[in-house]
Image (cartoon, rainbow, N blue to C red):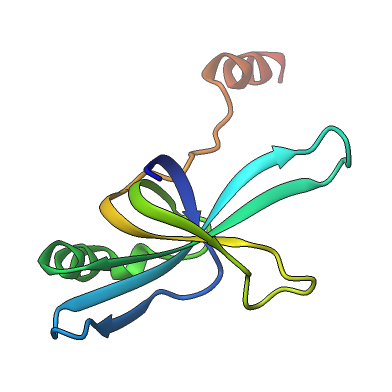
Length: 125
């Protein structure tokens, strides 16, 4: 299966290692925030454990390692997605595992007050 979309860094830190052939490998745990389930009322999330190997992964890691913190949005393109039992949850919750084709940092949302509301408040004071 092929997947393209926005996922978010989980609280688990990225892991750096090498492949059997010695190539650089980056492993990330990402989260899909799917929103509130109308039937249960609970927020639903889905976990992705993804690997990225090679020079592109190493360059991405060198440039962005300090910014790969919990909640960081990423635009991802993944392949070979497979569902596996989640190793760290009870009851076990499946996690999707796959390989990264492309990965790009996205800006975090900036929370601001709309300018018109700020001007109205200043005029009222």
